[in-house]
Image 1 (cartoon, one colour):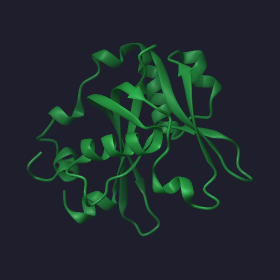
Image 2 (image 1 turned 135 degrees about the vertical axis):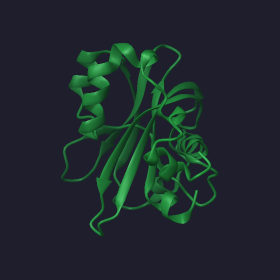
Image 3 (image 1 turned 90 degrees about the vertical axis):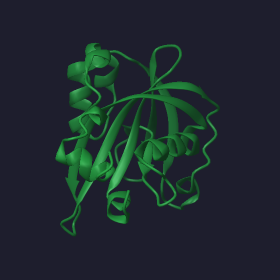
Length: 170
């Protein structure tokens, strides 16, 4: 991946635990309604690819090790400088986790709390939390029962977006 690709790509894990629950991070920030996110973060220069970045981020955020099954969803947002930012959502099994948060963001003053929370992998449970981004929350709610049947977008190597994110050698 080149520098542009790394600086504009974030990875997120849809983490299914051994007891078939979904592990999320509850975010609590001053003067903001609490919300839940999928663990993950930015692709860094030291990451060989998005999957490596996801493994690193999951270890930093929840002390976990994962098995990545598929790329479920890609969202595209626009930064204020006019450049796109992609978020890649991967379906994963959480093989184990210790809950220890090791990432640099946990020591930044004013960043708020990141509380790991398991919720049932059900539509009612998903609807009870303020899950962001809403674009992926809606996708997950719609296809929750069919996650195993959805395609792995990494296999679409000829698609221009996949080439752009992974580079020409995807």
